Image 1 (tube, rainbow, N blue to C red):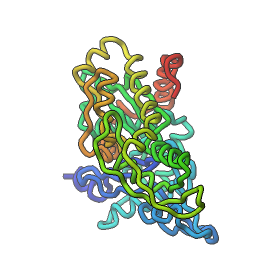
Image 2: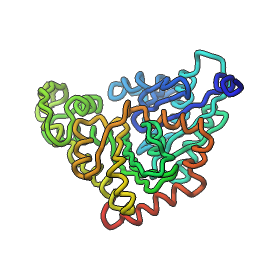
Image 3: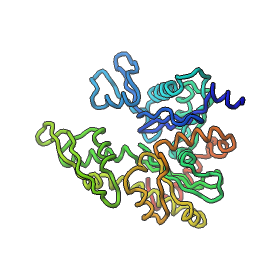
Image 4: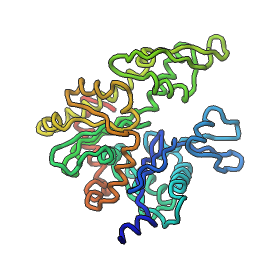
Length: 360
């Protein structure tokens, strides 16, 4: 009863502070906020104009007095103040319906984050009003949120494809066997589509590229989707135009970024001990994050790695869900939370083993 009362007035919050989206999960209540990681400021007064979806709508359309900021790059904070504003506003929005004490909050960080970057995330969250805050590796939270039993003796593998990074982890007995962070994600797919269209002398913005990725993006075999009509600028005519884009065009544009993700997965598999690799043939690979929704990706990873690959239920919210559940289990939290230099040692040991075969 005391635990229930405490959770009501001081909730446990899991935070996926992602490059593309920020998801807030309350243990016992589920996902309560999911918004783009975007903040808009008035450059004259420094006042916050909008956050989340409202701020993203201003991107590429805002007048000169409005600065639209994405406070995270590659999963780490690039603008501390904007990150603090984003976290504080979203947590307040999520919990505004009832009186409460400051929440306990756990944030997720990519495997490539330095100790300084980890502390920046922790300080931004604490400055937003959390009573207690800590952080865990993003891939570990994704595994828990996907329903994997990270305390099981048999190793399991998760690939979390976010906006700025792809986190790859092999987990066993509540510990990390291998952890890698590949510096590509959904934003790179958007940029690749923009670049490919510009090579055809046609310019579009990020929102249009993202829509093409979601509607026509694939790897492996084309799905047979009909072409989409988009609006942009014909660079030869120097005028606005409409044109059709087919799915093979988008697939070709995305190919190299997806190849980097596939090479990262294979590099991790090559680095694990033989007995672990044998166990993964039984337990398989689980995909999470927005990139997991790319048509054909799970099948392509399964074919290229020879390991069965599936997509988690609701992959977009796995990281935040997992973080909240970890916070509710002190034993699990102690097992997976990086101490001062543990995460750095995991990442460095993997890079040493992969140096010759793979460069992220």
